[in-house]
Image: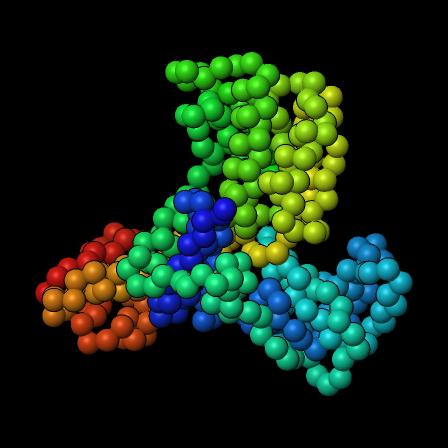
Length: 344
């Protein structure tokens, strides 16, 4: 039976949800107060068609004072410029593109949000029904650990010798499964089958945690694969979403599948295009660390954090919500992007 744990980290400015399945991080949800509600997964809006693009097989939709969304053609849809439609966000923005939309039906009135997407708490309930979320210090630590693990490019499993690497390019997600020399690890057909099965499940978990989608190419261990067996293992690992499309295993041992995009990739949520931490995320890091310290030691009358002026300015209104024990100091002597906690 699957063992599920759920964590809810409700820090001023940003709520995080973490799902742990069988002791491993499986989902990391992040919702910020300054997120665009019309771009959130599951949000419903009234939109106006502003451009119908037959080459892209879809239409661009004005959602109001936010970036336009893209509505793919579905079946015999007949969309015209100026038409009002009710739509739902089926995929959040990524790579500088607006959200992808799903047509609900005809709409009335000006472009606007009519229903926000599910909250982090509501999504956790759907992913782990009946499981009560852990809050407080443990939830903050779980969100930190989940984020750190999501940044791993791969993992080595000593029990089977599996060497797993998962990397995303502009075109696809490349998954490489290999057997690394390890004490007591065999290299026969049974060992390859066991490592391939483990690798498929581990890769699926890592991709969920990173919040990736698109084409996935998996280089299985060995050639001459039993296609039916490999496909069954792949469906067991990735088959939770009915929109996943599986391709056959080719003669080179390469298995392909297509995963639907749902959420903005985690690296884009946390970092800018230069790969560095977003200023707003640095401010959230300050607030989360300060809250962690306040909850960890309730006997200290005041805990201060020193940060560079730019980060301090962004963090100040959020730190104020932590209460009178929280104190923020703007200090240009602190290294850029760093901060210092002090007990006072």
